[in-house]
Image (tube, rainbow, N blue to C red; front, side):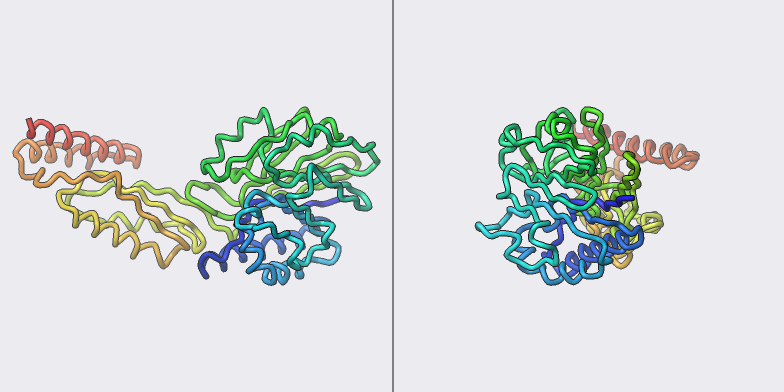
Length: 367
């Protein structure tokens, strides 16, 4: 049986001590998973580092982590587009990463490179500014070995470009016909941070997704793929990484009186490595109420999770609105209806109704 552990887009960084500790702790767990499942290969499909300067500064720490892999587990590493950031014509193999030089496929290896092993051949396609040369690549005769493609980029016909929300992350695409032409059994991909599985001309392909929460919006469990080949068949299993935490998006409706007692519920279930993004909405009579609640959110969450961000752009200040007779009558009725709400969904609807009602009253008073 042949076992591959496939990951990509780890974005190891030294931007801050906290981010360095976090990102490398995820690498530690990836190594643990490879050992736990007796993987023959750890496949790193690009953007392992956030930029080239992180290779320069962190190669020793990276090598130390990889040294804990079982001796049978070999590493295959292709460059992604982030390895090209701040590169200045340097090469990845200029630094000792604890990986044999022939197993590191840099972006200047165009259009592809084969890595031949006893029972598997890897067809490696690192990030390139233009994949057109792949159409001219010589097709090697198929052996009895498993043939696995490892590529960093977006494949044509998959509609996956919409999943890349950062202009700096845009990548030119790889023609999907390439994989069938070259007799590939499985395609290990990197670049898309959302776990995505699909078929290319009947060949299964997989983006494992970023194994850690790298930026806002990366919701869901962080995972790596274990791919097992035996007797001409394969089986893929997603393994969840506990050290990665999760991205949690929370909507919090601001009360006019600034009462924030409901904040305690936000902290329920939050983990130490989570990134919590809180969107404040509603109406306040004074700016100080917004700042008070914002401060209390940080005080509630900062000690319980890795990162907190609070967005107050959804809050409107309506000075003195509750002093109008019309608003008082509206709020009295609203309080009765809201108290009768039985579900969280109903309560959210009533909070939105209060906000819209007060905005209508404000518009009426300003006529």
